[in-house]
Length: 417
Image (tube, rainbow, N blue to C red):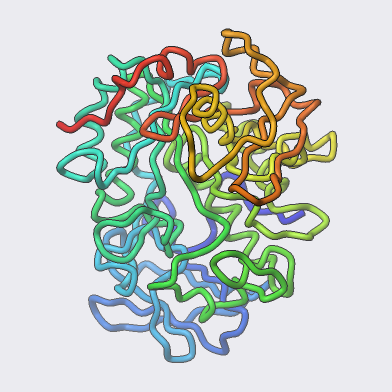
């Protein structure tokens, strides 16, 4: 099992109370690494340490300063940058997330089976296309009866608008949306109105443009292939640095940004043959964070395989995820309602027709697949109903036990201002 500190981030730039900066980057293949201060042009050498990490401490880098790393003369943005104000190819900006003045000390994350989700794209939800634009319309969710706002991926991507799944700076909130501080302000405002915040994160691939990871180290491996090419290296040579990177990212969103739940994109494309799967390690680290802070956080996966190992507890040999999207459920509803779909055809039927949402069968799987292809769904005989999140794939995703009113109406639409 990979282990990283729970209470603090070590990668990238972090600040002590006296504003002294500690700078650390994983670059196992480099022979020299320097910190480049963009304002003055000065360079400071980093010292090699254990596991391929390079490190230095300095009082010459302050919050708000721009910097890059120089690896054997090649100047690159920080792979663990928290801010990229000039885009994915530009310098990184030093940001201290610990100085934000939170007002949510009384916030309590609702039980997951009480979540009613509203999924939105920050760039298109409002005319402003920003976190502040979303924050100005939170009363819309409250009036609608929503208690969990899910943000589609906000990791820095090329340009100002993107679907979100081509991010290349997983630690940096998209600058055109409002950046790290804007995200913290949105989360704080959501909690003040009784709204949980769910963040969509992508650990199965990185986008192509602005992807400098291979310049730093073996972030990818040809041992496994994904729809995007070589898989992220969770189990090959040098994978410990990659695993640390992802674990610190998960902990940062929960600890420093007060995110309530993560939705992990397409985990069936996370290829890991390690003795302890990266999802299992994530579970164990989040449990330690919860024990330290007393704040509850949830891990929700998307998978098209319906394999019980993902949501079985760690003690039962699983990865311990709190729930997974039951994406097939909305297809079953469409077919049951008589709506033809060119994309999917039912291979079995729903055997439990109770009108009670909480009666979602624990011993039955609805199997749908592209016409002519074999279904990958597996029976879920031992998994409780509240570990399957039913979805209506428009703007609302809702939890088993809470979806009935929304599915009965088409009146829930995005806020347009």
